[in-house]
Length: 222
Image 1 (cartoon, one colour):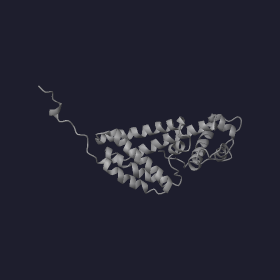
Image 2 (tube, helix red, strand yellow):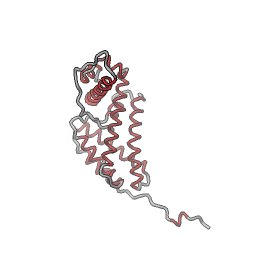
Image 3 (cartoon, rainbow, N blue to C red):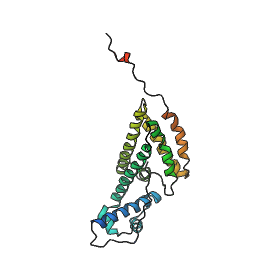
Image 4 (cartoon, rainbow, N blue to C red):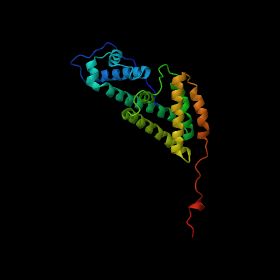
């Protein structure tokens, strides 16, 4: 469940000199991450070779290996970077405008709809990465689970503030709707699937609140 932030432009054909400094390395790293993110999300990780990435980024192959060591390490860096950016955007979208927990949770699917409408929406990099690799491959799965845990943790916190009797369950229910909407939008290219997911989420956000124990029930029997 990750938003691919691919509006950055890369500067092609700017190869680093042998005497490139730390600033040049940082610039090259940013271009390589941006290029790899775009190509991995659009074409798939396995279908994207190193040559395509360095062509898109405008760097030398030696620079990629100097900065990342291997394609696998580059994939890991892309997923970590994308996850961080997506979480900042997603949580920020829920919190923007303030309001109570219900108002914040209700912003989930309108935010997703705006993401689905972007030209460079290619689905969730985590779902895609796990989907196209050996299902026993633990590395990408662990990165994806760490990302999901942080996202669900914030939703669970809001669910608790909402007064849900089972905030963890509610967070996972909303998480399933989020993941389902992302996959459906990727396949259909229809941002409107977010509206359908919002309709399904509606009853969850208006469920009965946890009942507080009556004061009498808290008194010890004499």
